[in-house]
Length: 219
Image (cartoon, rainbow, N blue to C red; front, side, top):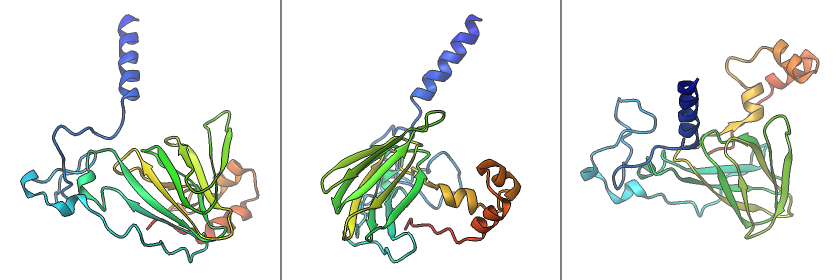
């Protein structure tokens, strides 16, 4: 029993400290050409690092919001800046047309902190089962809001003009799961019988949703 307790305690401690790998050197620029697969990216020779490995330009340019959602997310993670590898941070610019929506989604590997640069956003997140409590807030220019890691959240432009926000995330590659896309746009599709029972609706409703076009607003 004592051994079991110690094992459980060690597992809890490990989970409490789970995060992106910490660097053991000044930097670990990602080597996108390495055939080795690890949790993150393999480091290239630090002597081969150059300023461009830590640089990204163009975040001042608006994203194209002429899509059904009326929003565009321009991510800046390890794929855009190889020097972010092992540093545990990334960011994104989010542009919104009037009434534009960044639909309900989660970041499985990162907490998000968002600041509104222009416009007015209605934002919120939902806690986990069984409470499923909804936290919402209307944000204006200069306001900041936090979305805890893994929780479903959203943002919508409720102002009259365009809106812009900047988000920072606690992972070099936080990932994104857009709920509707994942459930109704899975490839191959999830069984419509299963989804009809899960959502307690007629199977024809599920078939219609699965046949719809589920777009990705991540650039």
